[in-house]
Length: 220
Image (cartoon, rainbow, N blue to C red; front, top):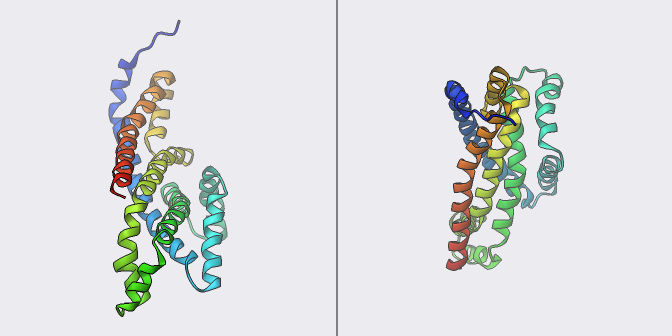
């Protein structure tokens, strides 16, 4: 029978911690950028100009309907050739994951906005507000409350998606665990520890999101 030995992983603790730091920091970056892209995408789909709506819908469907792993590889290997610029693995990964997440954030934000009764905007117009002012002061504050659970869920998915950047040699938790596994010849202990680390972070976050959803349902 296989003899488990997790003690050997202690000598690689700084490798794992550095990888975890990269993973968490990377997640923050792609979530923030994804929300920015998502906001532009959502307003684009709601634009009164057909060309803008078409561009926004093309962006959303292109990234939602293609595998994220394919996007990562394409951004790193193909985009530099087409654009004539060099791209580091971190830059390519951040751009691909941010746009991928942004396509989903777009639909969440759009859904939150259209869920607010149109009478709210009409009331703002009756008070002399411009459409932009009505959106900022009346519609968005109400819509954001409805978006939060879905946005949090998508952000959790983004955290899990960061594990794919290891294919481009970004030194995240998974990549560092591969280094430790190859060096220690203990892949079972190494990848089990990584799975536990992800679960330890994501399970509490998932519980918080569910509690938030219940509170919002009670509040409504």
